[in-house]
Length: 109
Image (cartoon, rainbow, N blue to C red):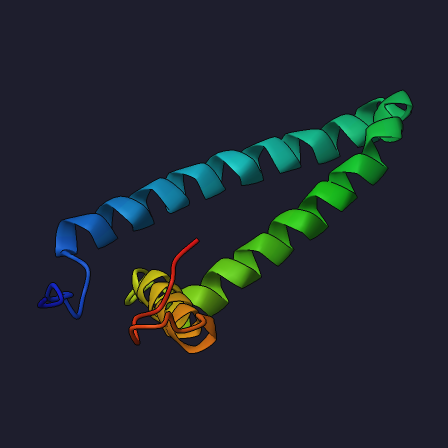
C-alpha cells in the first residue's frame, strides 16, 4: 500500500485567504477592544466586564501561541501519521500478546 504524496507547501490561495481572514478578524477585534476601552472611560459602571475581558484576552493569546507553535513546528505536515502509527502499534501488540492455537495460528476472541 502506497502512502499519498503530501505537498510541501500550502497553495498560495489558501495562505492568502488565511492571512486575509486573520487580518480582517483582527481589525474587527481591535476596533471592538478600543470601543470597549472608550466605553470604560465614559461610563465607569461598565467596568464589571473588565475582568472577563482580560481573561478572554489571556486565553485567546494562549490559543494563538499554540497555533503559531504548531504551524511553525510543522505539526500540520502529516496529520495522518498518528493514525497509522496507532494502528501499526495495535497490530503489533495483538500479534505479540495473542496466545497460539494448537496448529500454530493465533486465536482471536
